[in-house]
Image 1 (tube, rainbow, N blue to C red):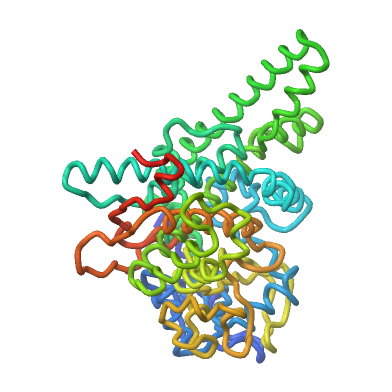
Image 2 (cartoon, rainbow, N blue to C red):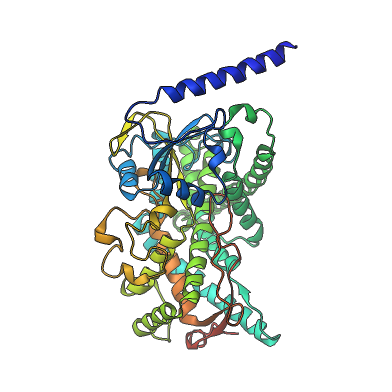
Length: 517
C-alpha cells in the first residue's frame, strides 16, 4: 500500500472520529436535531426544491433545528420569531458569510458585497451602494428614468401585440421583457447607458444564480473538493471569465469616456468642465474617481465586484416577482379587476402611472406583497454564519454555524397567516397581514445584511405591474386553461417553471400616449 493511500485512509478515519466526537459533545441546550450519518450528516434527507424539503423537516421536527451538512453545522429556522431574533438581537453574531466555492470564484475571492463577511470592507461597500444607488435622494433623482423605461416597455409590448395580432395572435413571453426593463434601468444608474444586447447578460445572470445555488458537495465534504467530481468548479471558472470580461469592458469604456471628457474640458474651459462633471452621474464614474484617490482600496476587481452584485440582484429578482404577481392576478380575475379599477379611479386612462401615484394605490401594493409572500424568489434567505456564540429562543448556538432561514416556510405558516396557501391581497389592507401582528415580514431580509434595494424594487415592480394592467387587457396563454404556478429551479432563485405567456390587447391609455403601433 502506497504512502498516499495510507494517508488518505487515515484522513478519512480521523474525519469520522471528529464527526462522532462532535455528535456526542452536543451541549444540553442545543437546538433539537435528528439522527445523522457519518460523513454526510443530514445531506441524505434533502431533495429539490430545497425550500420544500427543509420545510417538511421543520414541519415534522420543529421550527428551530440543528442539522449537519457534511462537516458544516447548520441552524435551520422556519419561525418568524426565531428569524427576528437572529436578525435583530443577534444581528451582529450572524453578520458573516460562509465560505463557499462560489464566493471564491464568482465573488472575487470573497471580496464582494454579497460574499465578504462583516468588517470595514463590507461596511464601505454597503455605504457606497446605499449612497450611490439606493438612497431616497438618489431614487428621487432617477424617477424620470424609471418612468421612461416603463413607458418604453409598454410601447414595445404594444408593438409586439399588434404584430402578433396581424399573424393570427400569439402569446408573448413576459420574463425577457421584464428582465430587460430592470437591466436597462440598472445599467443607466451603474454605467450611464443601456446595453445594446441584453440577452448575453441575461444568460450570465441566470447562470450566476444557477451555479451559486447548485449543490456543491465539496462545500460540505472537503475531501470531494479535491476532485471537482461534478464539474461545478469548472463551470464557475468559465462563467467568471465571461462575467469578468463583460465587467472590465464596462469599466474600460467609462474610463476612456472620462479621459475624453477631461481632455475636452481642458480645451473648452472651466464652464465646459463643470458641465461635463455634472453629467457624470453613474456609479462607475464615481468609483473610478475614488480609485484615483485610493487605488489600493478601489481596485478594478473591487469595482467589478460591486457592479456585478448590483446588476445581478437588481434585475432577475424584480423581474421574476413581477412575473409571479401577473400570474397570480391572471389566476384570480376578481383581484385583477379590483387592481385595474383602482388604477382607473386614481389615474384614469389619459396618462401612464408615475411614481407619485404609488402611495395612492394600496391594493396594487397589496398584490405585490402577496406575491412576495406566496412566491419569494429567494425562498431561502442567503446563508449567514455565526461569528460568536449566541442564544436563539433559549437554544445555544456556537460560533461557526451556518444559518438558513426558510422564508418560504415562514410565509406559509398557518399559525401566522389565515388561509396561508391562498392568494388574498386583502389581507394586507390596513396592516401587515399576519394574525395578531405576530412576528415580522422578511420579504427583503432584515438587519444589517438585509437587501438595501427594497425601495427601488418596490418602486419598479409597482410601476411595471401598474403600467401593464393599466395599458392592456391581459389573458393567459390558452383559453380556459389556468396559469401554471409550478415552481421552477433557478439555483438561488425560484422562477416559475413555465415562463408566463400572455395575450395583450391595448387599452385607451396606450393610444392617448402615442405608444401604440
